[in-house]
Length: 444
Ligand code: ADP
Ligand code: MG
Image (tube, rainbow, N blue to C red; front, side):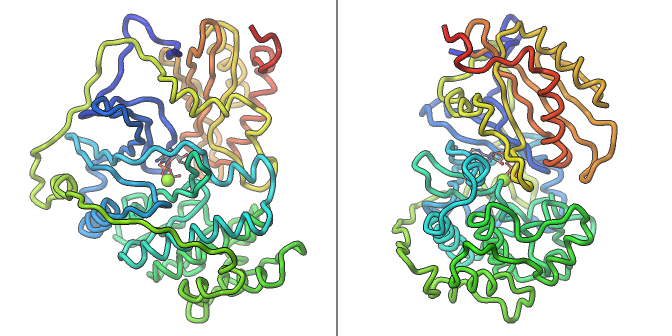
């Protein structure tokens, strides 16, 4: 069993209701996602944690409640299941099916673009999923690589359906503003911000995703944001020569900036290129209670049924499953793709040096790169001093003990631009070479 390097007299595990929280799986713009275990059943889950005040204060609360309720009812095999919703005094917890096959785009990052047949398989799963959710009145509005995960059998699992109406994009004026995210996947009418049809906008994003799967790079890309927007508005892109003629035709019909002439999902499903080998999934609905959603989003602010987040005084162990779910990351070679924006927001390396030496070495290397370093036990927060494309780059670091005298060091982007994180990572690893351990060096 591995344990956090800080495990000792004062370490603890956090419990929320029947869930024991584990490591942070990822951090988005407005929420944190943590690994957790249901202590009653032993089931692994992912919990999305949101700031309650931000969620409840804004005007779209009834839409959010409706979409979350629908998501709890949806049992589509390619949609990440929503198990339950809980609230404490200050937070909302959305308990989700835990998916451990990584992100779909990791495949491209590690082995390059896909064969057309493979890309079509994922695209069929994606379109079927999106169409199904639309038919239930739920739109995604934020389809992007980070929300396309894979399960252990390599099936697509779309996350965050129905969650995009959450505060992330709703500013004071109460309108949806998705443009603060990665604009590369966003439809022109969404960037334009004039109110839009969620179904048409989602299909555009699916078109961009299909392009990336088959090309290995983005259709619209520019380091200058204004130029990038111009390219998106005019749908200025070129298909690489290896796309088949029928694939090119379909992509052109999807990436049509005019929402009136853009192909509809029902037409995509009838398209010859799309139909090849298409097997829509068969699944059944289930009886699901919505009492938890009602309790969390009740207008009255009724605070019954609140859970408390409490710490349990016992050594923190990283359970074996958690470890396996992350261990692919111990292999540095496949983690980064130098191309375009297909870079991970988190990475790990192994070290055989003592934990405090690792910490001080990171500090020693990060400081001259212009980072302010805050340390707390075996966690660190590195904050960039320069303002980048998306504000200051900040990086969270944590050291875990995976075996006696073998540590796993995790570097995770907690704010700022992914590309800048990639550059930061390249710089810092050059400085950390001495303390990095590569598998096979002296396997004991
Ligand atoms: P974003 O806004 O970028 O989608 P999220 O807060 O939704 O960020 O999630 C952050 C990261 O956490 C994701 O990119 C993904 O790697 C991980 N994650 C989210 N949901 C799950 C899940 N159900 N199972 C496993 N990992 C997840
Ligand atoms: Mg997400």
